[in-house]
Length: 511
Image (tube, rainbow, N blue to C red; front, side, top):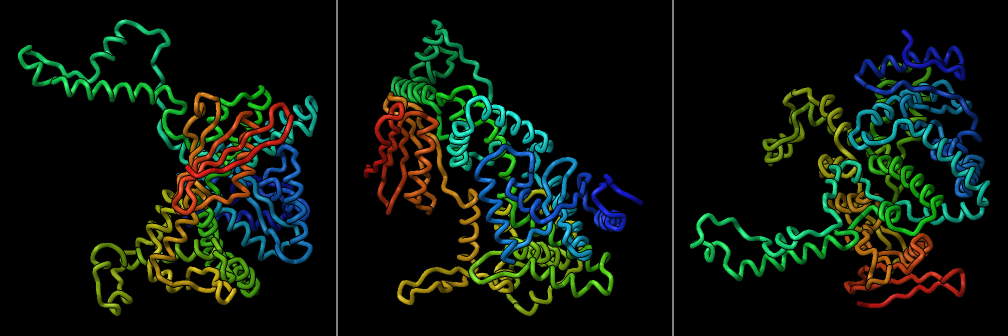
């Protein structure tokens, strides 16, 4: 039986293999979009990878730099991209023409795992499934602007936006829609009456008034109402993590600049879930390509070649975290523990190591559990809820750091809690600092004020200056950033040159 779409790029043998692998994947319960496979050579693969999987994207020098780096890596034998798949409906996957038949089988099984993850994981549920068309439209509009305004002018603005494209809120798509603002601009007598009577409780009997609404209470409520009114006048009313959205609503942008910023913000949100689920996504795809190949698709003559390829994917070098390895092993660990019933209060309270090691209630819930985890988790919740001390020990996970005395990187500790804490720290907010807009009119001068919420991560002075330079170029007025350095409050200020005259000024001071 043939499944999904046909592809003229595939040879008859590869079409048969594709249908075979797809049948196995669906037989295991994977649920994915129709997937179209296309054959490309290594130059095309590197080009597509440089464009983030979307060859229809707008022209920019950054993509050329990425392509050059990927091409050199392939030429020097340092890296090879076997496949690429994009989160769309239908999904498009690219196969390297130079892959062996075993590699093509493995890649197809891996791709179906990815597409199942794209379709069913909660954190991908808000993404644009027609992003291929959207990015093509973005490219047409940006090329049109380059022809009209000049490539250098448009590209310079894109540079500024790309320097701050991480200043979004990945959780914003999942927040409830804000209530419509029902306030009117005209002030009425009833508004004044409400302000005067702020916090006054209803009294049915007049003689109870002084007890229910004593003067001190009414005075306190009036102060609270005044502070709330002042807060509502502030822009934004509370710290705002989506800096790009604030710029779209408040920066003095020309129409074409607003259009470009909106397009690049949409693309940043499209790619955000991939950064939030890198370990899970690669682990899930690796789990299923391993399962399908070893139980269904491999011929006896292909076993050695598969093992060599699979081992290359999961190999872990000292000092580096391989998301494929951590992901697949954690999914396997979850499946094993839920099959044996090695979870819950009874198991956690077992003090006998021998009993715990041989624990087996024969529940058989492992497969069901990993599908549930695949649906609801991101990398942070995946690691936080399911990484155990036993897992860390078996996988030989550790923290390392630089020893100034020996002038070498060394293992600092293997303590499970510290290893887990460090990994979660690296994954939180995609390993980037928390930056919020707190005031769009600082000192009533139209200056922008940002706040770095210090979560144990200091700002890099060099990148702070470059980021503020890009923000100032878009805001067209001074930009300020509150942060903390060695437990001291510090304020960075970037003042752009006026009308291109003079030089930009960057300063810092303790506050």
